[in-house]
Amino acid sequence: MGEWKEMPFSEAVLLNPPTSLSRGDKHPFVDMAAINTEIRCAYPTGRRLFKGGGSRFQSGDTLMARITPCLENGKIALYCAPEGDAAHGSTEFIVIRGRPGTSDGLFAYYLTRWNGVSGYAISQMTGTSGRQRVPTAAFDSLVVDMPPLPEQRAIAHILGTLDDKIELNRRMNETLEAMARALFKSWFVDFDPVRAKMEGRWRPGESLPGLPAHLYDLFPDRLVDSELGEIPEGWTEITLGAYASLNPEIWSKTSQPPMIRYVDLSNTKWGRIEATVTYPMSKAPSRAKRVLRPGDTIVGTVRPGNGSYALVYEDGLTGSTGFAVVRPLQEDYAAFVYLAATARGSIDHLAQLADGGAYPAVKPDAVTSLPTVGPPAQVLSWFSQAASPLLRQFSAREHESRTLSALRDALLPRLISGEIRVSEGKEPDPSARDAHEGSE
Image 1 (cartoon, helix red, strand yellow):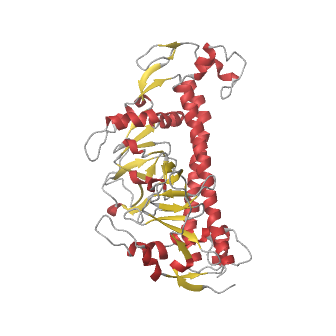
Image 2: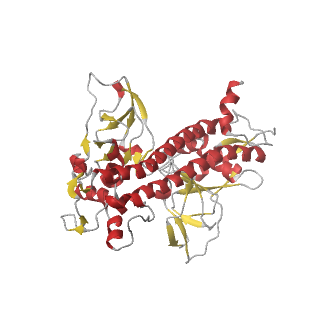
């Protein structure tokens, strides 16, 4: 293995390197909101006129927030240009690029994420409270150990393989959720099976995409007027409470466990429980009261438009009292209840109902009061058979991604610091870590 060399961070990488953009033309633009701390890549949020200011970067550059609280919140990302275009962005980015002959671009990203660099940057913030920034010159005083380029690439390959799988899971989950929501909308909002029968496009013994022949007799061939608009004949106008109970369990002093895994609104976004925090019950937040069971739908009641909702698949979780916990009355109802409660129209409706000034909120029963159609039990049963596997796959990939993220975060400091050395000639599988540790 080659020797590692100490050098200033500002000499190991290129900081805010020149990037050519035509002034007066529109180019891809990345704002701070595009940096998702759970995802390695940042993508353009659109194209904007370049007037000469702000940051400039190319595909493969690292974008690090330099302002509080964005940096403390972990806003560091790799710019991934869909078409390889150079871009411009927020003035609050420090752009970091691999230095030719010294550092690999992807290694530079992981080096920047390492606490030895990001933590140092946070410690060097200057300015007034609430508007502190990292001066780029501070990196002249930060000394880092740089492995030879082949070893850098091997390290980046290990960490990058984990992030590649996390990214693949994210994309697959976008597809799985879109399929489940499209099926819900088709059956229970647009009533496509009924319309297909009305228009003669679906006949007995025939199948249509997503509509097997054996489902033909489950759907009527007429729509009738209702307060919800036109609905299938024989279906009813009801609320979500017909299919679910609200906040069915809370911990009491006698029933509470000694330790809990806590789910908060801030860690629950658009169908994903991004993280849980383990507490002794004696030190848990006062809002840690709601007992969560597999199959429950949780919907944030504070600022409901923020999309703090998810379908619970794990046992042993405790939710904040800021959630409305909606538990299906039957297992077959779980997919329907989740997709109905968290449909875009439902979330928008809850957001419009919210009041309370700085913390607009709705009462929990606003969720179970959401209007919906009441199809026959057989329709719900068949819908569950079609949609539930999609949602289970979503959950399984989320669980896998959390495991991979934890492995990556454990490996990163050990690889970047040289505690674990990587052979320059090969790029090992991260799963070999346990075997490696066991042989020491």
